[in-house]
Amino acid sequence: MKPLHGADRVTLSLWEQDPPSVGQEIDKWITVFQKNNPKIRIIRQHYENETLRTKFLRSAATGDGADIVYGPNDVAGVFSRAGVVQPVEAFLGKMKFTETSLRMTAVDGKTWGMPLSEGAHLLLYYRKSQVKKPPQTTKELIELAQAYQDPKARRYGLAFYMTEPFWFIPFMGGFGGWPLVEKKETYEVTINTDATRKGLQYLIDLRDKWKITPSECDFDCAKSLFLSKRALFHISGDWELNNLHDRIGDDLAIAPLPVLSETGQRLTPMMGGRFLYINATAKGPRLEAIRKFMEFLASATIQKRIAQQLASIPATVEARQDPALKTLPLLKQSMEAAHFARPMPPQVEMRAAWDGMRIMIQRALAGTESVDEAAKTGQKAADEALAALRVPSSQAKK
Image (cartoon, rainbow, N blue to C red; front, side):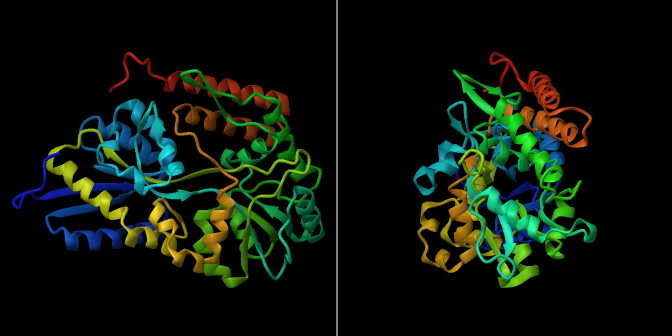
């Protein structure tokens, strides 16, 4: 790798998809880095999730995409399959990072993203003043929720984003299912299974049998109900920790998702994090500048800020051992809850699984298809999406 010389001046573009508060924190990192590296300039650009992915896939091929993408682990398969990013092993000090974080962007035997944080897992939110002890099982949760709810007053026991598959995964996992299964050298999308059907019926029962959720509720609706005390419990991601704490204060409490009473298995959320991906065309002084910036973000100072300012689990072993983390009770509890999560598959097949599950859930909850029909429809949609996503190995870019 060519080192930076005195005459070299490099401008790097960084694309991210996170909320404004995260973008503001990234700007602070950039400011400090540029002060210490005056010949390197970094320009941050925000895009929404799908816009970032499609724009990078399209523009990176022509050489004018972002130099660095700050994003989740589940794009690793799509980006690597398209040949728009390069592996990071050549300048990644693997001993710095937890093994879990390194595995989360491992596809086809290579690591495609440098870990910055772990997490993005679902938690059970509640208020200490309303719930003395968090429910350990779904039976306990339902009992507490039913005692609290009053649909006529638009007060519910539980609120979460019911139609989004990321929130369905824990129920699928609680019944022993998972959306991807490894088969020799490939992965199969496994939606039309008994575990999926049971999880889907359970989702419907929360609304129609136990009547503890609103009939319809998206992300903003669920959050609003919880903030206004019209929902006793709220299931959302660790990315909401700081925001909800700012609004609720020390009355806010979190717990792992409970054990599914019907199976004795815990509801199993997925876990991801934030990773840095490098444009496949980066080389020479440009690549050396990227390396410098990545090393800076893996430093103890920035990893500590990721924990303190973003309430995210740092990805380096050194940061995990920092005594300061023990003074952050919500982060400590979030880290404990993360032990019950499973890493989100980075393989390209996961994109097809998301598409299929979204259609399945929407149709089942709307009542336009039975649970059995919806599971079959979801599998068919995923298989069709996968056929469009897969590239024959002989054509894939190295």
